[in-house]
Length: 250
Image (cartoon, rainbow, N blue to C red; front, side, top):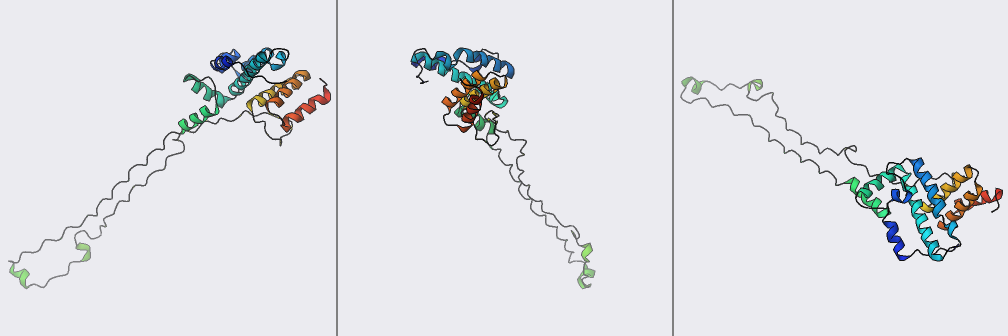
């Protein structure tokens, strides 16, 4: 199926809708409610329903469906949803890579300044003993006696020099951690298989796995075909499609 570009005004109308409005759910909707809303959304806007329409309508339907897959991908992931609610309160309608990086930098914040080091206190000098008056006759002729060490002023008292205070390192609990905006995990049949990279392909693959678990092989086959259109030559998607086609011939 050839992809046609949406009309010029279609992108502007689509960008004006946030994810909740696009899927028709409340802002406090649960994950199950969001997934159920996307199933209804897919029944209306899936590109397979417009194969006989004009290229303009085909491109419009494809653009809407991809935006819906992006919405369910973000709203069903707890961390991405918190990040999206933050930028949505500031007027944004999508959670793009640039917006996610801006949030991460904002969460880190400026590094705290190190406290100033206290200046060392000068060491105190013990006072000198007062000289005896020269007018005393006995002192003039009496031999000088050595003053015992323990009797000298300041003896036995060692003035301690205070050590400068060390700058305390900021605690890792005092620094705000950047939010993790990880891509939703998609369970595939082979644990060592390479990951599905694009959000659209992951959304199609998840829908295919749900339909396969419910026994709806026709819907699973369609979802896998759409996933391969969004991400061609992906070995994970090709292997899943081959597994479905072995038991179901479209």
